[in-house]
Amino acid sequence: MVRPTIDPRVAGTVNRAAAVLLGFAVLACGDDSNEFEFATMGQGSAAGRDDGTATSGTTGEGSGETANEPTQGEGSTTMGVDADDDDDGTASGSGSPTGTDDGELPVVPCIGMDILFVVDNSATMIEEQTRISSSAAAWLMTVNASTASAVNNVNVGVITTDESAMVTATAMPCNFVSGQSYMQMGGALFDPVVFAAEVQCALSVGVAGSSDERPMEHLIEALSPQFVDGGPNTGFLREGALLVIVILTDEEDDFEAKTAWGSAGDPADWISDIAALKGDIHRDVVVLSLIGVDQPNACPNPQWNGMAGAELSPRLAEFAEGFPAGATQDLCAPEFNTFLSGVVPGIAGSCMNFSPP
Image (tube, rainbow, N blue to C red; front, side):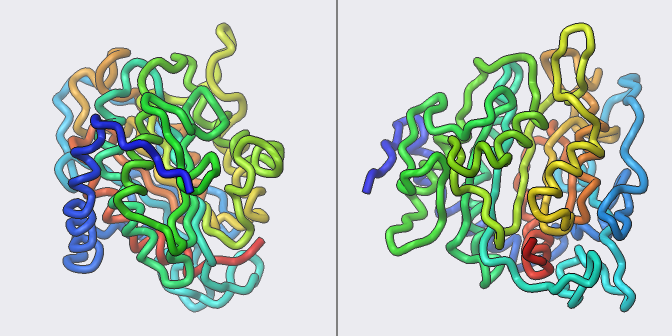
């Protein structure tokens, strides 16, 4: 077994992992005031139809003329997508199994989770990377424990906005115990402290990446058959597992004709491509987008100057809102813990409301 080298720069984070995990456990299992239900939360949310597409999107530009005020959880803002309503009036994305949905498909609990982080590694992202890396390991362990059918059967991968292959060597060299290009939770040799070091290492993608951020292009390619079936991300995507996508970027993904920068296609194309990976069953995908959102938010004034804040990203928000379990978070929020702990019940509900492709 190859164990990762724990760089001195992450030792403090590893030593704090147990304490942080305890904090998440209290949030997830105790006071439910922080829980965000995908079916009901919704500043700018889009209601999902039976075919999984969104009926409306988040649009508009922030004026930047007034100071932005944070909301919900010390500066966090969330937008959830209303889930499809079944004939019995139960929301399919609310965390309660409904028997059938999406063409009367059978509903069974997922047998695992495949969680993929898409992290912007451009020059302006160091603070945001620090915030996600300080929260991610404890959050992942809480997600892992949230559903009995999927516990200890979780794949965790990280890609950047300029590369589709999962990271194994980032700002610090990583050697995952799994022996794969992604991390795994579970098995007799699973060690939470070692796992915390792996997550910290993988998410330390640095800020030397391309300023031509293409999160959607690389997300779709990373999960494509040529990458997960015999390619660099082999074995990551599994048929019976819930797919959870976490996007972290401070710029919109908008194709620019003059420079050819940005991902091709529109949100509807991206939604279709990702849903196709799960047999076009939209509720088998959870999308969490930490991006620039409409005011009120915690960004400076102006909203985005090319170096500070976050560019409004209605296209990325529309992508998230194309799935019943979709939520967006204000990237400028001073911490991500409130948002991440709040979506755990929704992720668990999506696992319980799963239909194998």
